[in-house]
Image 1: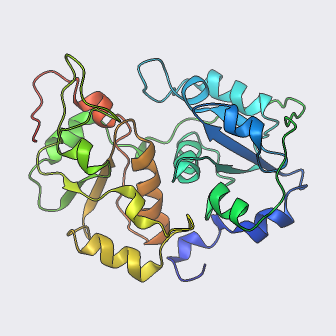
Image 2: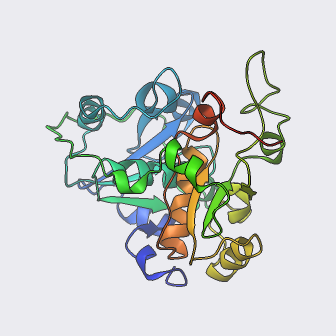
Image 3: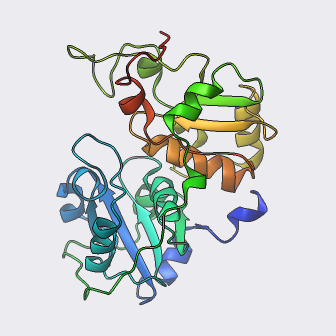
Length: 279
């Protein structure tokens, strides 16, 4: 994995690394999904379940930035301030989004599992059905890091800037305005994309086995769309998850110096009064 930017060497792990650390008390594995059913059927041994909507988002689908709620989540998961966290989910890129989220909250001991559950299962590695429980800890949240996020006012001001790329990583159906999230829009929902946004779906950065494409493949992919390291890049998606994943790819795998995730994403932008939308 040394093929990537230097910053990736300490934050990217493979299936063998995880197999070697399954019983490491200083490592906590987290499965993140919208339903507990896949977790109950089979999960990586020792993994704790987080519900994507209940544990990480507010009812309006914005990230829950409440420090007390974050402390409670980490504490009940048996995570201390020194624990190394490895996250995965059934949705491609879940682990990299959790990496971004924990970095914003100041939890630096987190790694991205290259290939995730898909790769683990394909190698016939052990799976468990029993629920994983750990003694609660006394977790203390740090101040959030605003430098990893971009807010809608700055996104609005960046439209038309030649030194900045607004990167839409949703599906083509979402970008073109056919879908609002994962289905056609309901009454009152506005579809389309932020004016001038470049489209490059996040899943194009992955191999068929769920691992990241090579450094050169990723570099060529982004360069083909004019997304180069000399520009400031603001990725966005529907609710900030796929764009948080893209933040990781650009910053840690390719070494782009100026990337911030617009976690408000389309969920916020489409509901702001008076903002421009293209279709």
